[in-house]
Length: 101
Ligand code: HEC
Image (cartoon, rainbow, N blue to C red; front, side, top):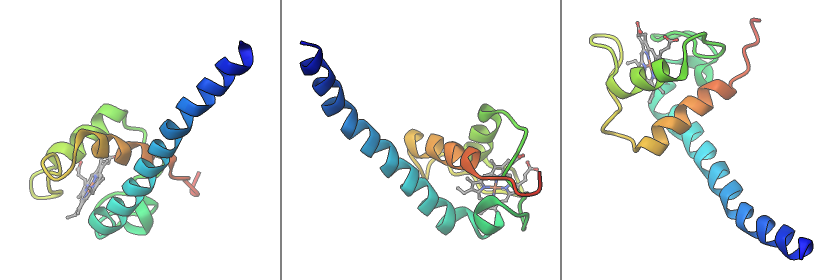
């Protein structure tokens, strides 16, 4: 019984893990093509926009900035990407290693 249960859990988690990995890869790709122009080195260095690696801002703040942008500074991406993609971008930013610390 336990074995069947473990197998069921493994089979159902597999796709979820693959899905999460796909989201992460997609977020990295979106970042490179859409955000990297201003957030240099994949968000690890400042450019026209600030360095994002190691930011102290809460997730909600980051999500909101990406969603609505900032007039005269950063475009809004709330319509360009789905909710899942926007959240994956925040996860991507959180995953960046901050070498300067
Ligand atoms: C045209 C240049 C430009 C592009 C393109 C751009 N940004 Fe920005 N971004 C900025 C600037 C400038 C700021 C600082 C705005 C402010 O004062 O809050 C900023 C701020 C941010 C912040 C808040 C950082 C913090 O710690 O305050 C996040 C998160 C962010 N950008 C993510 C993204 C993502 C994700 C993308 C791509 C989907 C993106 N940006 C594309 C220029 C840009």
